[in-house]
Image (cartoon, rainbow, N blue to C red; front, side, top):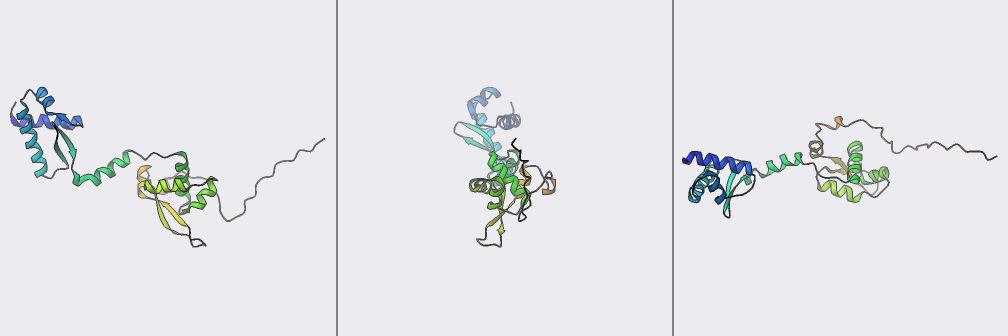
Length: 187
């Protein structure tokens, strides 16, 4: 096999494999000697590096692997984050829903709606960058307010918050009159 064809074959195999391929295996498949495989793979690796391409070919122990360039790590991370939505527990999803609909929302507001402590859920959502601080409420204690982030929109495939389905919101600050149960008269 001529040098250029050998390089193209190695390139295709490494791309499709997605993991390290042993030099011996490449040599067997391509019916070439291991030194020929190494020379062709090293030449490809040099070409990718010289042209500053988005991918590289690395020699790892007794094999080669195609990887993304370290310079492109931020872009790759952002792109793959949208493919794999973060795993959210039921409590985190409830908390995120409340913040999305009532933003800016305080932890106390979330806890009032949910009826349970939400400190862990808020911290987890901050850590996953689905919510962020949106200032402080101008009341005693100055609680932190939270809002959703662009990562929230991207993760849930929304272009804006207006795309959220409508809900009946709870109004805060006004007394809510609960319906009284009918009393049954005893006979």
